[in-house]
Image (tube, rainbow, N blue to C red; front, side, top):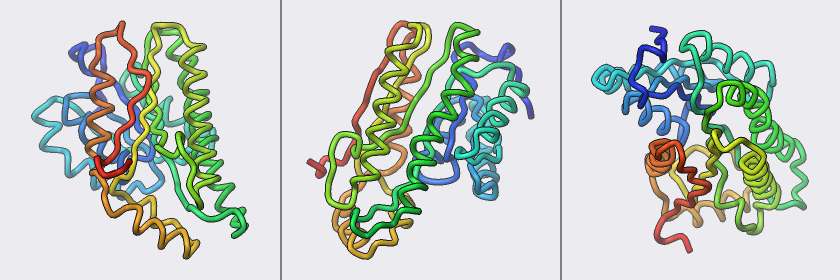
Amino acid sequence: MPTNQNESSPDRKVILVTGASSGIGEAVAARLAGQGHHVFAGARRTDRLRALAERTEEATARSGGTLQPVPLDVTKRADVEDFVETARDRAGRIDVFVNNAGVMPLSRLDSLLVDEWDRMIDVNVRGLLHGIAAVLPRFTAQGSGHFVTIASIGAHLVVPTSAVYSGTKYAAWAITEGLRQESDPSIRVTTISPGVVTSELADSITDRGAAEAMRTYRAHAIEPDAIAEAVSYALAQPAGVDVNEIVVRPAHQR
């Protein structure tokens, strides 16, 4: 049911999460809705979003939160604008935008999987920019807001097979840091860089060598809820506190 944020506790925020049908995005949406926030969960796989809403129904009923599925393809600017407009129309405002959608089809450069490179650029970089373009004017007009970008440990290091992926995640880190520096202090900006997390990301790897290396690399992984907890921590800080960046990874990942 649509909820007017003006009738809610000031601690309850209207939060948009992209890539919410699995992995980190799913965990973030579920945790925040369970804490009483009003979450709009966006992704292409709407069947997964509906299942998520059903699974969290009991927790949201207890907390007073909501989780509303919305179809979304972040590579399409019009889709992102519609996603934002839908949330604003239903809830009256937007407080937080979590840019989470991402893909990771790793490969060596000499594999020349150009279509997969393009896909990473479209989702990981253009998708992020589409979110900023849709939400920044609204945050500026209302004098408040919080951007959260889910980057990656790949924004801080490159290994064989990760060149393009790390490039897109470094771009995500750099764009978000630029956004932080350019924004009014009333708009908070946080980058969260996960290490190895249990998710479907590695399932998209078609390069055999990269897939084999990833099986070894992912021997130690943390659950997506560890990242959701980091997002929750950043959002819960007082208005004058801006958590700029959090790196979260398994203790075994050095």
